[in-house]
Length: 221
Image (tube, rainbow, N blue to C red; front, side, top):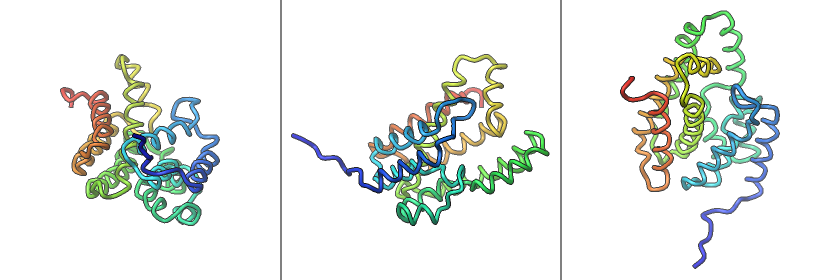
């Protein structure tokens, strides 16, 4: 017998995707010429396949808009809806304006000092807030899809490389490998605390876990 979809894309869904394309039209993935919209599509796809709602999928399209563009949470609430805006807010650890200030400060610091005094503190706060959430919080699935996409891409970039070439991969990030290790292991612990184990979202969590374990092998921690 035929099965109906759990939800059908509304005009708002189309608008959220169109808006994301407009906001990120000139953006690329770190260290490449790959259009950034590919990341947003990948995150949205993972959200949908893990049983996410239309609002969660729309938030996936827009999850980096406040961090990387001049878009505000208030604008998202007005143009899309307050729930999507709330999810995006929870997925944001710094606004574009705050990151611009950080970028200027970073110029006067070593990578080590920047990682320790700025990047690490911001990420540590995000992990603490994520740890306190449960899967009932609609932002958790979007965050998991985002972090899984990033971890799998990083794992693929590092796969098969020697020590020197691995170091070059880490250079494209704002913080060094040791800070990235703490970040990813912190996220892994947070998602475990959220008990991401329902039948539809658990495979996504397992993908994230596998990617983190490939990047930072258990025996080397």
